[in-house]
Image 1 (cartoon, rainbow, N blue to C red):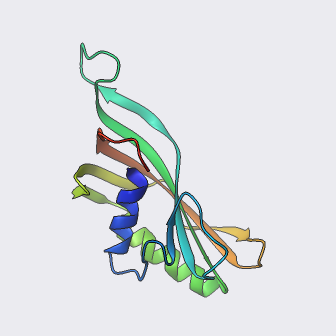
Image 2 (image 1 turned 90 degrees about the vertical axis):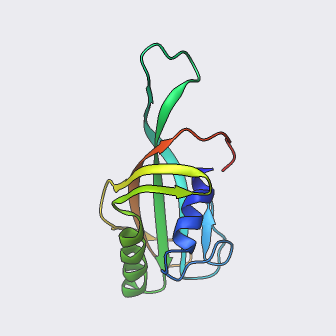
Length: 138
């Protein structure tokens, strides 16, 4: 669910990304050269109300990792900057029926070497606070 939501967010944010074309969830194909991928990573424990039993969390606090790649440093850095601007500080927004209270950057876009094809890569991570989703699909 969160990956679908983040693809929706980035696909509608005006940064030039389209899900399935140059924006991917959990993986990315070898092409196109300029692309972005969103992955789930370890987050924080959920928030529970007093007396709530197992499975009754009020909020989830996942973390996502966003990777960008491109043929030149300038290309990948600009894409990473645009993604960062679209995501960091997002508050009280509903995406695909899930309410997101906060999306907050853990780090600024950071150079992350080269892929197997010699393209530059950058990575950034975001902590998320959201209402509990009713679906476990990506």
